[in-house]
Image (cartoon, rainbow, N blue to C red; front, side):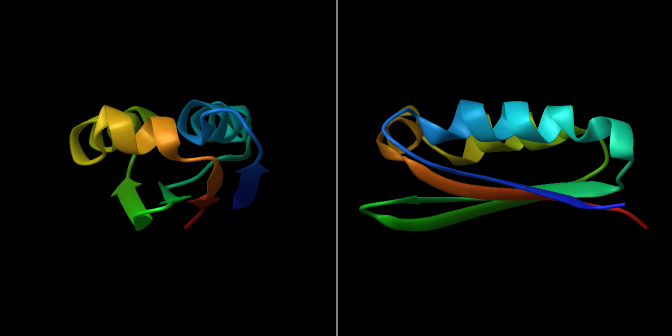
Length: 80
């Protein structure tokens, strides 16, 4: 099964989105991804496997400043 979570608001979007995806883990999935939007554009991060690999990729790919400025985001999990 797949699931979708989104966030628009004043708080930092990255952690909120990852927490929402963790709440969808019980549904089962084989991959997950997020799209983060700030004034610089859209950053898309996708990974297969566990959410922990997505979290690590987000930390490596997106700078702390980018995540801090991001207040719009969308994430999904995809089942096989």
